Length: 220
Ligand SMILES: Nc1ncnc2c1ncn2[C@@H]1O[C@H](COP(=O)(O)OP(=O)(O)O)[C@@H](O)[C@H]1O
Ligand SMILES: [Mg+2]
Picture 1 (tube, rainbow, N blue to C red):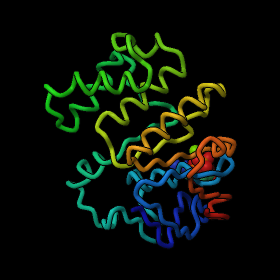
Picture 2 (picture 1 turned 90 degrees about the vertical axis):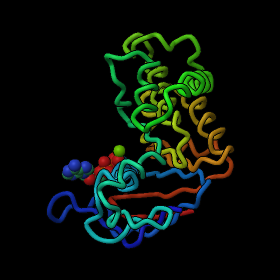
Picture 3 (picture 1 turned 60 degrees about the horizontal axis):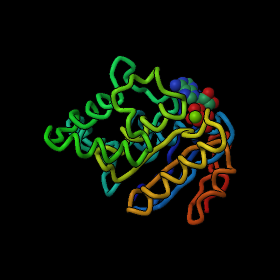
């Protein structure tokens, strides 16, 4: 479970990216973090993977207060998370296969296990036959799917995606949300930040947090 207790983030003096946020996300939830650009959605996600710390308040994940998490534990903690960045952050000088391998090796997966799992995630994201290609030979939608394949390769407990449909046409957005739904059905907590609240229509059982100017306006 993820809990935010009176969390505020101030990047620069007097500018609150998040103001006194209180919320809970249960294991297995499908959560949309909604709100217009500048509302604080990305800041909310960055707190969860401890890229930033709250200026005030606490972020607690599965009983661990992230403020108190020793630095040495951070890599172990991050292994439980899969993150799909808004700009993908793929390694452009490596093939699709190598991108996925790299993510798996960096969390000490047994080398012998990699090919099987790699094929699984490529199949799941409909990237069969694309493994030997470099990202710049793929369409935007395919690169997006590589980013997702890489994020789930280590079977994370929590999948975090920042505007995963941000620059894709509608048909691909539907496919991607459907993939997230399948992962959620097998137990993964899914957290999606998006400015596009139409996406919520694609998921029948979901929760939502609506942010505006750093404030939590509505939670369902
Ligand atoms: N690194 C940063 N330094 C200063 N201000 C930032 C930084 N990141 C975000 N902000 C500001 O914090 C607010 C929330 O940003 P963000 O969390 O990126 O919102 P969203 O993802 O909803 O568009 C915005 O006003 C943004 O300009
Ligand atoms: Mg953002």
